[in-house]
Length: 319
Image 1 (cartoon, rainbow, N blue to C red):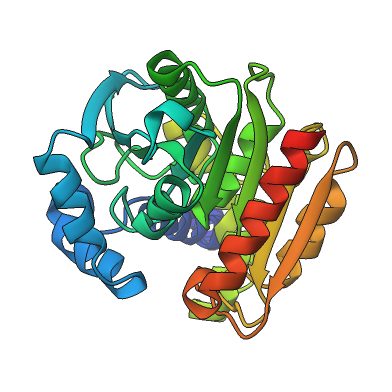
Image 2: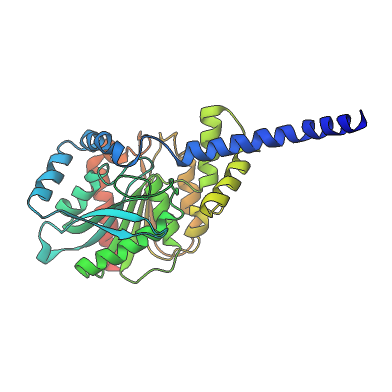
């Protein structure tokens, strides 16, 4: 009977811990392995591209048919095959620079064709736009929320420079792509990477998942988020708190434009100020897109969006 009581007490003590571990494992899978994904999800995202800017996929298909828009694959940071499409400037002989356009969570290179068209057709930039691991045509076990993705984007920057040999490159990301951009900005980068544009990126993976956990499940971060972060660390080599835009921005010395819609309730609008304040070195600008929900700033204010980005890049070139 004494041993039974001991085991019963131990079971009572361990039960919440076991439940937390199971919940953490579930959340890690739920957050980092959304479905559908990859090639299975291409058709949905092609339609999404046209909803953001009509005619985008026809534009893409036409350039591809002419052999102007091409694609390539390389070996990514984790040894997996990763994919990107690329297209030269509308007038290649007078190209103004190169842009790397980085998509968001559960999206792929098709979705933000409005940015590719902006850089190519309006700014006369060469553009490379990759699929992050686990998305589109790229391989990968799970979404890496920008933290490991930044290493792949750094590889793509080298590829783009090898194709066009420009001395002016901007990295422009939306949502998770914006977090990737901010996380990349704190690394040691080649001199031709001159500027960054982040559109509605989160301040850290921890902050974003804590918001999602509260908003979708009405639960506090502890203990589920702690457990999920441990699972992520064990599986993928990084934890939610270390995957921080804010910490990387503190090391960024190159110019950055911060964009966020003031009606964004997916990546809360408060993340904008937190990110902006974290960048303490070098030039920075902020633009608040009035009335825009998440990743909707261009759709809501297309002309203003283009002008803010254009003016920012022109200022950076004069520095």
